Image 1 (cartoon, one colour):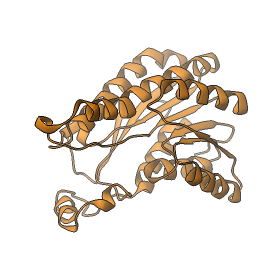
Image 2 (image 1 turned 135 degrees about the vertical axis):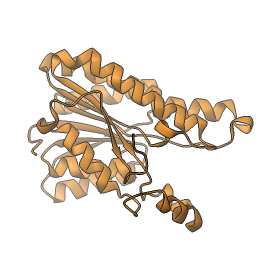
Image 3 (image 1 turned 135 degrees about the horizontal axis):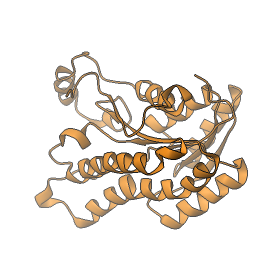
Amino acid sequence: MTLSGRVALVTGASQGIGRTCALKLAQSGAALALAARGQDKLQALVGEIAAAGGKAALFPLDVSDEEQIKSTFKAVLAQFGKIDILVNNAGITRDQLVMRMKRADWDAVLNTNLTSAYLCIQQVIGSMLKQRWGRIINITSIFGQMGQAGQANYAASKAGLIGLTMAMAREVASRNITCNAVAPGFIETGMTALLSEEFKQTAVKMIPLGRVGTTEDVANAVSFLASDEASYITGHVLNVNGGMLMG
């Protein structure tokens, strides 16, 4: 699979799944627009991609700010001339039982995880339609499919991403633009590293493959969906969960 000549924009690219996705897309030949709040981490990632012979530029972005999204995407288009691949990865958690959840925590998670994806898609869809080629990939979650106690806001936002994915797939399919989602299960990241060892062991027992996933597992799925090899796949949710959820 080659992405030579393609330009990819990844939100939340400074760490975790987003960082590994950016590296994988760069390895496949794409030029990368790296967007996130953590500028120091983005700068290090730009250096890592450049050292491997790739091309990348950083764009500071808080996806909860609509005006920042608009100005950032204009800057990316001005620098690269196009955006072929959009990976909506940026996300946060504000866990709490519904009966104690503050409205501000609900709004923050929905705005960052779901509304930002809609806004980012709006910014790229015009250029994708003109060139009659595009790949939109939304990073959802197994908890958007099966729910999770204490994560009503997060689960709702990730379930919403699945609906957004399918609606967009129908809207733009006639222009050779695909829109898919990747739903990771239990993945080893900085976020999951904070969980107790007991919780991790319990989680592994629920995974038929018997191991926690890696960010590379997710990035491989994203890279495939971004490629020409996946040109006949759209409106699909690709589960990367070790068999934790089937059906």
